[in-house]
Length: 158
Length: 284
Image (tube, rainbow over all chains, first blue to last red; front, side, top):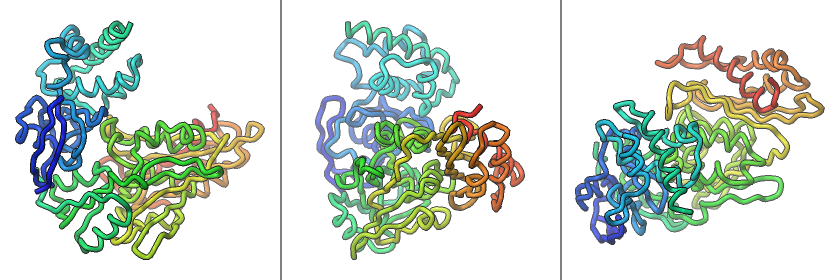
């Protein structure tokens, strides 16, 4: 077992983990933070995406021990108290989800995308979400949601 | 799947990692960003005794402009490589190829050195390293040695890095003023290249003066299209670029797989080489 100290959605945890434990399993099974889901288990679908030290990572493709000392944000940590993150609001407003399974990863990847590029073109949004698959193929409204989120976030800055 | 149990060692320096490798014996496995290794572990295609994690070794990270060349630490992430100003201006073809690797999440963790040392025959950066005559610095218990790109890639998933060694850095000669492009042909987002062509071109008076061409996924190792490089000298029109690119299939004996049979791969090698060179040269 390895000792792991990690901050997840603002709370610091100290746990003993087996080195083979994937980060996504650690989040779900050891911490009970089941907002982050497992989709494909093959590094393709991106629904397990979380922010590790501020950048998007597929949590099925990282060992929990590698996150030692890191700060992690899951879908459960993006809202500010009762106020949704603008990306969450935009996904609701633009109906950027159908079955909802890809949504945790889509929202996190969209936050990462907008952090790096606050005013993306449609092509840049589609490229930027390349690592996230929607099994309902509802990409059109997801792209609209990110465009709307960009407007909302611009609004919060001014 | 859940990987088979293994021991874990987080190395803090190259010496530390070399010692862990020596102690772990032949089943020890180095991990860079883990974006190839974790999927392999998850599929239980490999069951290492110990995983030596190199992702926290400071000396393996970073990009240095050393005048005539750019030195990239093996542990530098794809995201850092493709966004580095010196790489973008002096090694455009490397920035292009790196931006086409997998997806943003994987580029945040995956490393240039990890990808090169993994040496997947479908990978996007090995043909760039080969075409640009990159130099690989490898550390072992007896010290460091330098290997030319032409000698580095030895077969599918096989390189000059020995089981008790670590790739430390890769030096790329700067190509200031050259055009560059990476033409990747694949079926869908995230998919591996069916074929990819890295091209760097230096123009003089509207004509191609020098060209460097590397192809991926046409064999077990990246391929340097030397015949095309020679035939391109003096070319100034798209017809001349296309004629020179016919040599891209010279001395190639590609494999067939579910994406492409042999004839189609030879065809793609020629067509994609012409496209890549035309983009790099600004000839349309």
